[in-house]
Each structure stands twice: as structure tokens, then as C-alpha cells.
Image 1 (tube, rainbow, N blue to C red):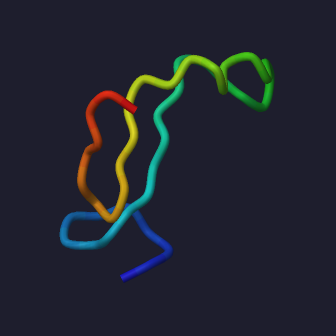
Image 2: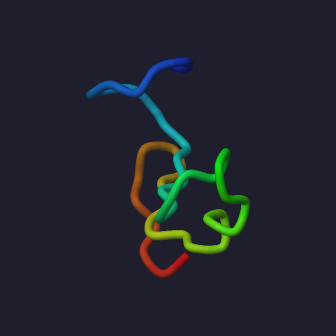
Length: 43
């Protein structure tokens, strides 16, 4: 249940606004967080 993003699998994800590889400040612009496959609003 690890190593891929697909329906039915667990996932810890952080969605940021921008490309953190090209612009490290994009890591400060968090749009959404998922822990264990569940979206965590307000993080």
C-alpha cells in the first residue's frame, strides 16, 4: 500500500503552489495536505 498514488492506496502528500525544485519559496505556499490518504483541511 506504499510507493504509488492510486485509488485504494494510502498516501501522505503535500500540494504546493509552484515548483519547489525551481523555487524553494514554493514550499511555504502549501495548498493541501493528505495524511494516510485523508485530506487534512487547515494545515
